[in-house]
Length: 403
Image (tube, rainbow, N blue to C red; front, side, top):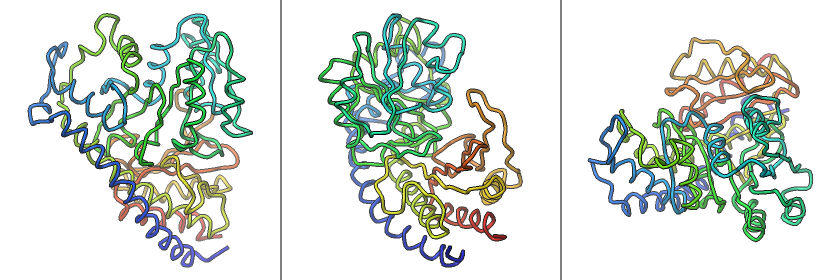
């Protein structure tokens, strides 16, 4: 194991290499985002608030249009009332599936909170209660389109892909990893849904799924969105989901933005650069962990499908020290001490660290960790790398300085 000083030096080298790569990706994504803004003709009036039903809110329609263009989709629905990524996925599933249908989850066990939605954990009002079957296809052999096609049954209406790893030791999926499987779905005439959380703008293109769903407190909010989520993709499917977000016959034509939309527009505009910063911080952390002989995924320089960096801290004590130091290096609540807690939808106590300006915003530097073996920490975010690398170094020093 390298000394902490040597690990920090190697991590800095990896960080500088990563910034060059991530900036090149950010430039390509920024060009697409800017084109979406200009194509929609965004003006000052589009930032204005709306109240009540939100009738005639031109800015709301243009926000949908800009998100669709930025993500390379036909249409999008963006709402602050969508509470989380899990909520966005649930809305998409309720919009697409009907009693008697089957959903195939093609990327192994889904994220903890989604298991309740799917009925994989007995929960009232889940898909199972409505007679919608769910099967999970493991990733032991990778995302094999031939195996996927063979797994489709006569009731299979949709296939769900989770791009990020959740709390699992498996790689985040890149658009190129997903494309053969998405093509197999198109050929079979089934709907493909992609949980795009943590993955937006990490690559120069987004997955070509029929529906993309995500959270605005993650990548596409650019660190400015105070909440919300999106559903984007084929127009008729987005319209079907809009009827679940509001009501059949109302769809996307209602929904107010009492606080206005400026932060949502500006957050999306800044998102490519903010994601590039987060990727660079993740590379720094990966190299630091590798030099200390820890499990790290992805490894420095490896392809990335999301902004999440897994750090195998190995013991409960190290994990707690790392989280406490990361919290202490944060701009908000730096004096707080992270404690594992029971959270809705999670089977194990979860440790969360990171003093963020927006509570739970994963594009800001933070750490999640289910308190269970092998005591992995899931580091994500870092909208400003100059702060992020200092916080990560201090966390490693606190976790391993006594070793």
